[in-house]
Amino acid sequence: MNDSSNLWGGRFSAKTSEAVVNLSRSTDFDWRLAKYDIAGTKAHILALRAAGFLTEAEVTRLDKSLVELDKRVANGMFTPKPTDEDVHSALERGLIEMVGADLGGKVRAGRSRNDQIATLIRTYLLDESSVIREAVLDLIDVLTTLAQEHLSEPMPGRTHFQHAQPILLSHHLLAHAWPLVRDLDRLQEWKTRASFSPYGAGALAGTSLALDPNVVSDALGLTAPMANSIDATSSRDVVAEFAFIGSLISINLSRFAEEIIIWASAEFGYIKLADAYSTGSSIMPQKKNPDVAELTRAKAGRIIGDLTGLLATLKALPLAYNRDLQEDKEAVFDIVDNLKLVLPAFTGMVATLEFNTERLEELASAGYSLATDVAEWLVKQKVPFRDAHEITGKLVAFAEKNGLELDEVSDAELIAIHPLLTPDVREVLSVSGSIKSRSGAGGTSVSRVLDQISALRRLVPAGSR
Ligand code: ARG
Figure 1: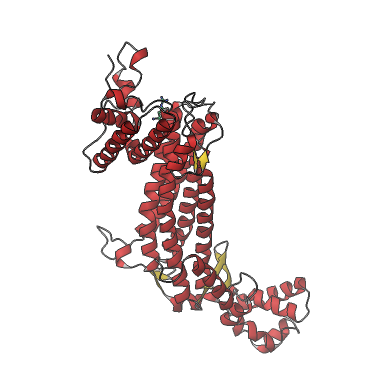
Figure 2: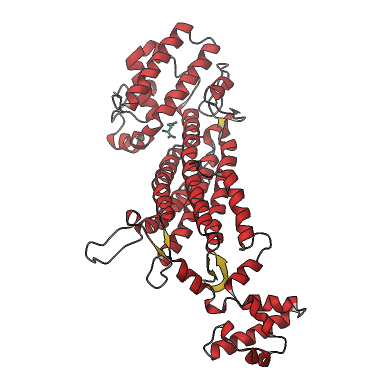
């Protein structure tokens, strides 16, 4: 016969095969939802009471037992048995052990594990999203502080990984902050969609017991019950969207991680990593490795894998609930766990970066990165940009051929290249002049960076974290 914890004893006479029990069991991973399952059950018994299926005394008894069960789960006194299929069946067994089968057995009325799990994954992710939000805010705070500290220090700006134009280090750092701000916006918008309650949808078609789903939704702090019971039990778009936002966060981290790895190389020498946030080599005593940045970069790959696996599971899945949906959980659990692991380490590494600002400044003008300034200076002398580009191109070619930087070309040579290249052009042949001149919206001038810092400080006030 089936084990007593099996939820469908009535219809079956033969024992479930051990291989099936092993395949079916999800407690190894869904146990982390236990407290959300108990919260759902507490809310559900309120709905059962309101509809007259439980007396006040029964509710009090059940509630007390659920509080106790919650404690036992938290302190590890109550754990799933190998024969419990999932978190729901394990906790139902636990409740029945405490209050007896007569009372405990009433709680299953009007709900299914299908609407239960669809609710729990939402309440769980809503909680975790706040933790992740805080960790991302910490990083935005650190980037803003760093930008403030390095407000007017120049560095080479790149496109195609080639020297392009001089920029401020502060501007570059904040370019890594803004995508994270948008990720938090995404998370906020996701929250409004995630905050609906599938409870009351039953297995797929709703309940005939006249339970008010608002009671559960309110008790769980959600916005409202879902409108369609089939959708409520079978959709996982909210889970996939969370996975996508988590992927974007990790991808955004990985882009900075990649730069940190490159910047820390001897060839670049832009930064030094703090001892506490780097690792050594077991064989090469001289090594200081950017493992934190490398792991951050790798986690993005893994998290993208979680997202694509989940999307593939959802693709072409017919309505309504299918057991395939059980596989949504490990994907997002992995994302949550890894973001919570990576973010504090990455933020700590960024906070303790030591910049070689002299080198950054020295390299800011390398690679003829002031050429655009010359061309724009010519435009201000009313030369059409097309011609300005051509003239500047000639200047760069001359400098390159003669092994000179642009400001090393003599006045006579400038005039010889083109009569419009008067000595006045030297006013833009400096890194600081170039940066100062880029004061248009969103530009790299100190004034525009200060605008960004104040905007970010509205989100993360200084000293607030
Ligand atoms: N453990 C399942 C899940 O995670 C929920 C239970 C629904 N199972 C079922 N056979 N209807 O999706």
